[in-house]
Image (cartoon, rainbow over all chains, first blue to last red; front, side):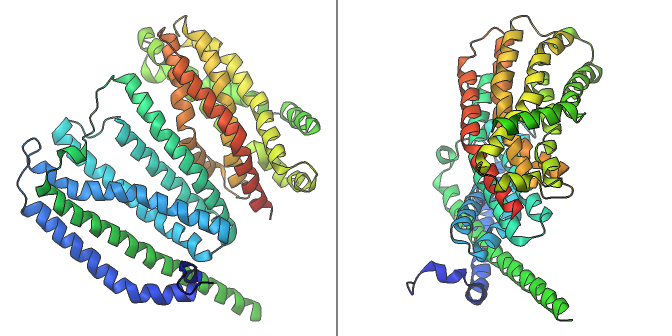
Length: 246
Length: 218
């Protein structure tokens, strides 16, 4: 195997050693980015013309929505790696990412509702974007529940991996089906805002810092939780060995 | 393969509960709807296609755990796994048997229940067509969910949690066909998409179901 290969981190021991060395820096960077981005965004930017001060919730809403989708993609990649190459760290990383992704989805939904109330006059509308995020949240719940329900760790990893693959296809299908469905109900009436066009530079740069903060926070959380999973499995193995010895 | 199909059909017909329960559930849900939303027949006519689709979907969901659970308990699945028949084919046949015993009766019963909900006249044909085109997808997707949860003691609720999000696209397009049909609009786009989901799911999902089943039998 190539010396620089990423696959060497499939070794749980090496993974733990490396992640322990990287994690403090990651936590620090993540919180620094979040602190800078949020303070900059909340207090040092002007109110937008159309949105007044409500625009400031984008510093939570946009990054969390972004991470909600990227977390699922990361789980998909990790599941494929587990199914193809049978690296346990990969399966555990997918497991570790799921609750983080679910919480990100929830944050995106809640901040969206808080923003929607003053802007659209309603907490919730069956807009395609909102609806597909709610469906994504359901997919996260099902995935987490399947992990929790199965005792044998390898069986659980295999079955959740298959579910993640099939679920990704259906989540994508649902996204387009929901687009179709809502067009069928209200022709052309779209509540969703196109962020790219509305966001000026003044808001854009703090937003970028916030996004970087969320990405770093996600990586740190996943590394940390994967380490926890590895240790939990080691404890289980040790206890089983002790019981077998006694 | 034919022997397996006939065996599953016979079991569903004779073992009691499987065949009639789904239909009875479909009937009861439809009867309960006017109690919950009121007897206003204009309102019922508007929501009838969607209610009938949702009720059919739930009736389908209820019978999913019977697809594999009984064969899992008495060891028939292990026999199937060691037989020369590929697991993919066995799973596909089981999905087909489930559709014949659950989906098809629902399709046949839907127009009768449409009368109860004051479904507009042009809607009957499209309701039947949309259910006939969509319920096979429900059976195939449901078989996948059953294959994932077959080894679990209390898999019932988990099965619903896993399968219902997967049902979203089928429900959207199916109910859209029925709704547009009832309102006299063009239905070809959602109908083609619905047929696409059914054919795609029937072609690809048996592989995923078989993979899950092999893991569970390991």
